[in-house]
Image (tube, rainbow, N blue to C red):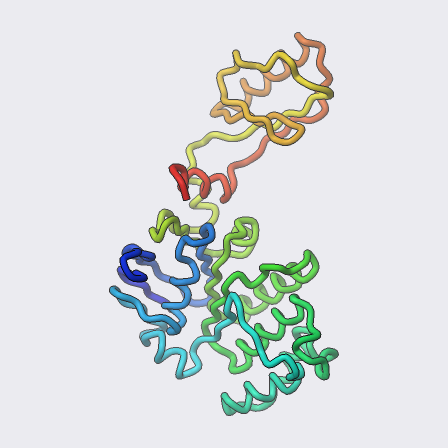
Amino acid sequence: MIKVNHLKKRYGKEIVLKDLSFEVRKGDIFSLLGPNGAGKTTTLECMEGLRNFDGGEILIDGLRPKEALKKGLTGVQLQSSSLPAAITVKDAMKLFCTWKKIEYRGDLMEGLGLEELSNKKYKTLSTGQKRRLHLALALSHSPEVLFLDEPTAGLDVEARANLHKEIRRLKEEGTTIVLASHDMAEVEALSDQVGMIVKGELRQLGSPGEIVGNIEKEEWLEVCWRGTIEDFPEEFLFQWEKNKEAYRCRTFDKINGIREILDFTESRSYELLDLKIVKPSLEERFLELSKGGI
C-alpha cells in the first residue's frame, strides 16, 4: 500500500532524515518508533503530503502523497491540532462532511462516543474527547490509509485503552494505519511492523517479535530479597543492575543463573521474595540500538 524509497529531508544545514526506505502492507498497522526529535513526525508529514522532502520517493497505492490526500485515499490525525473554540462537536463533523461532499457521519459520532457530546463546544472538551473528535474527522471520508501522530499522548489509562480498541477495529475493517509514537509498549501491543528511527536513520525494521528476536539469546533474571543486600554478588558471571527494589541480571544461561541465585540466597540466609525470568522487550532492543546517544 505504501512505498518509501530513499527518503531524505533537511532543515537548512541539519539533516533530519537520512535515506529512509520501507514498505507498508495493506491492512497492517505500521509504527514509527523513536525518541523525541528522531524524525518520526517529519517522516509522517512527508508521507501525508503535508511537507516537502529533499530526495527519494513516496507512493501511496501508486499515488504521490499530495495526490493521495486530494483524492481522499488518506486520513490524518496530527500530533497537535485544534478547532475554533466555540464550534460544537456536531457542527465540526457537519463542516468536515460538507467540505468533503459526503453525508453526515452520525455512525462515527455514535461509534466513537461523540453523540452525547454533540452540543458541547470544542473549548470545553477534555484531551481524550478532543482526540476522539479529531480521529472521527480524519475517518469521516472512510480513508484507506490512516496516519496517527502520537494519538494517545496526554490521555488517561481509560482513554488510551478505548483508542487502542478503535485502532484495532479499524485494522479489522481493512484500514492501513501508520502510527508514530515514542511509547514502546503501545507500539509493541498494536503493530504488525515497526520501523525504529534514531537520529534520522532507520536502525531496525520488522515485526515486534523479529526485532526483539534480533537481540542475542540473553534474558533477564529479576530477583527481590527482603532487606538490603550488603554483599553484592560480584562473583556471579552475569551483569547485575539495581532496579527499584529488585536486582536484575542479564544471562545467557538462566538455569545456571537461577541455581547461583538460590545458592547465594541460602549461603547468606537471605529471604527470597521473588524470582522471575524477564524476556527481552522492544524497549530493550531500542535502548540497545540507541547506545552512544540519542
